[in-house]
Image 1 (cartoon, rainbow, N blue to C red):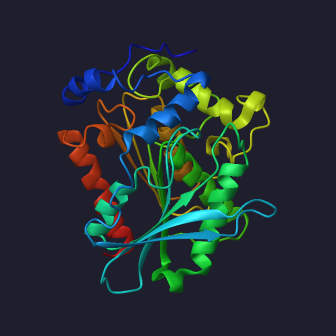
Image 2: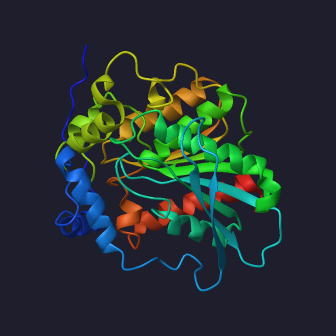
Length: 325
């Protein structure tokens, strides 16, 4: 018997008030013709290079490292806390943007907040974007950068036993995929994977995708746009690789401890809950948070809200426990 799908969960009141303003600048639905204007808009919205040093708190380095075999080099943005004792934990970051927008600085300010509380070296990867570069280009770029980071941990001031991968949204999906690749290729031994509202399932058919159509941030239409850019006509079909859509993986055993969080009022809710559940069923370790009334990326867009502060504090507690900081 099919369980009926009810109305969408309500937004948190603080978030709902902000969403009325956000919606004027960030539509819930994204179509293919909007990709280039979104990229151009992101560029014009930033006046010059942000102060990644945070007034000298971080040393900023950019390195071009070998990419996947036969492909261009991959650029890594490396942020090292100034005057910190080394070696430190390493946070390998994969940015969000629906597979179609963003760069290595996207969301990195949040990681700098973490590194202020839990001193860590941040390595953020610049990967090729879809649709110009479909799967497997993005995930292979990310994996190549991770391999280089692990091999050069001592040079970077990173304790290789405390190297984690982290990402939000599309970056969360790529983070989960990189963890799968590291397991399957005998690659870097990861201490953890931090998946923030991760984009995991190309099939785009869960109850939460249906409930949130046309609502919040990154709805079902936007999700179709992102996945189709990455996979083309293969999207939703029988032959999608788990390294493109980690929800397709049939074996989630042997993975590093995971932190997974998601809002109750967003497209990715059900696929993220299912992923955590399947990690447990495979004998693995996962900490799952479903934030009531949270829309996609709520803590980035409304950081002052009480629920956003709670979400950020939960992540820091997990990092401290995992990394011994």
